[in-house]
Length: 76
Image (cartoon, rainbow, N blue to C red; front, side):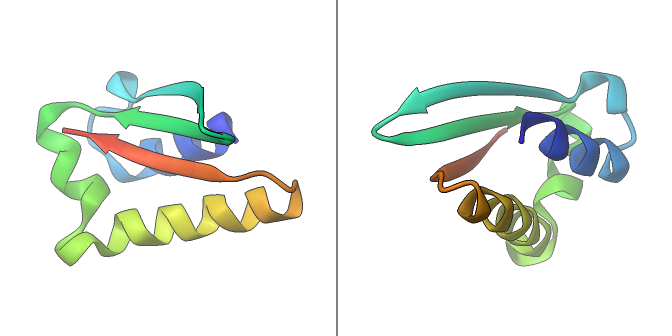
């Protein structure tokens, strides 16, 4: 799952070397904290959050098949 988030984020940003994904367990869910270069935050979030919502939808779809609850948090 972590690799999936990294691949999606790296495809969107201008500084792929600065993409970091941290995985933590919290309240029966896996939380993935995505951090990118400050210039790329807007590209990952998208207009009105559409890119972020689409990324969360893809990750959640994969997690449902694995019977897991996943939260993707974008750090600014």
